[in-house]
Image (cartoon, rainbow, N blue to C red; front, top):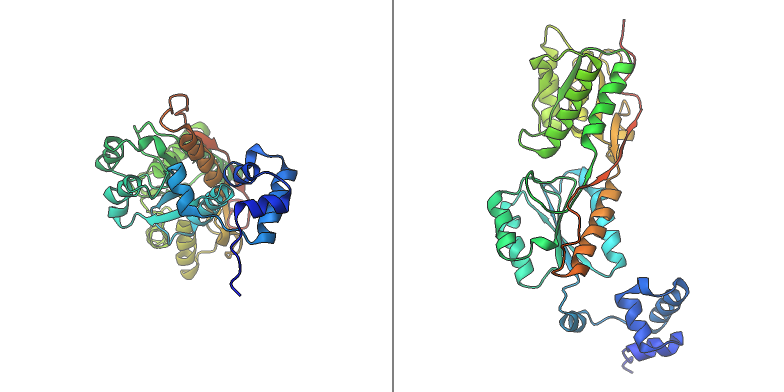
Length: 344
């Protein structure tokens, strides 16, 4: 016997509510009381009702999907941001598509095509390296009012963004090392043209100036947020005649690469050189030594960017009332075992 497919009126009968209330629970659940929502969703589970997404999307002229541009899916930093985005949009019954912009085609015309082909309603961009030509494509096709930047951003582009307080984070890192007695503090940067690199370098220099710390050119080492750049920075430090006693790294992965090469060459962390990272990815707590670092609330970055994008989508074409000042997410210093008082 073929099982009958449950319909919306079956759910309404099971829940003891109107079909309009069931529709409201599926499309705008926040308009209903918690008790009514639970009642409807219990009835959906009991009846086995499944939403006809294609029909609903045609009726509402919405794709009920968003696109997230990620500069490197292999980087574990992005996992919690994506989790925050997925959770926020899952609660609103949206699908989340992810594109890795290491393939640059995904960042430009292909992303615009997602909009024009009605496959997505909006986009969250975690990549601050989009070119002016790529951004111009979004503007020319009238979809830039449904784009939000998270974590990274593009200088001079007036689009909503959610970002960590990177300047303050760098200041906290340098101040912590200073309070441990360090005066010879090196810095390994991120990629040269990255907005996070500039913000963290700015915070580092501001705090150095405030504390009266010396700045030597060879102690500012260019990196790119990767393990490999940390390893290369470590090799440079090993051959310095005047070694720093502490290093502030622009990312946790840089710190891991740095510590590994120092340790392999008999330089103890933190007894000989203290190391502080930035991000607080999951491995930081379990690395040996456990990494002192600046924690970004990555899940909050994702959820707040999602909330901002949903506001843009719900506003339709009328986004004049939406602020363009960045939403700042606070950071905090997490003290672990990789930084210690300067050795006499």
